[in-house]
Length: 223
Image 1 (tube, rainbow, N blue to C red):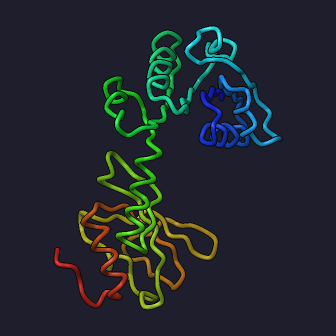
Image 2 (cartoon, rainbow, N blue to C red):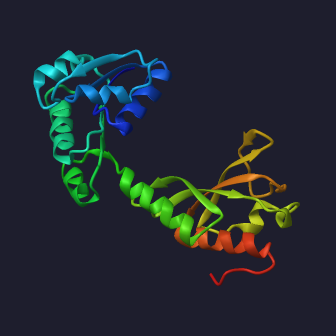
């Protein structure tokens, strides 16, 4: 896939490198030549120095053949303007935008742009870790109403079934990691000490799960 990344700060450089290592053709744009020092030395892609607000710079980066464009600068206005131009003027089919300052999130929503808010995501993850230790967030959907949690199964849950820890309508098992491998569990799957269970849950479901883990299934949360 032909992909352009705009912004070669730590975020953009890490993204470009991951895409490159996955076998994609990657171009990366930044107006500061020193920013390209953030790229690992084995990165092999097209490096374009210039302002992404310039049509000429975008063309040099290959936007006319780009299948995806990632806007990763620390300027929300730049991200929105370039994303809109890429979609409307160049017809790039997949445009993903980084929301740098959460206060400008509504700006992206007005243009109906696919957005990743690293600050909001980080804040949510840290809040979860502080308030609900034992449930690591691995993915979030919508505005965080539903998330996928990774739960380390303690010894006192060994031999019990997954269905014993779930609350109907609020939790769904997604994957079970065991002995370095992964499988798709069902309600009847028997848990073992050291398992890592991924569960999609609402806030109510997460609270119930954590209560069940701490209680060993010998009491429930008031639902």
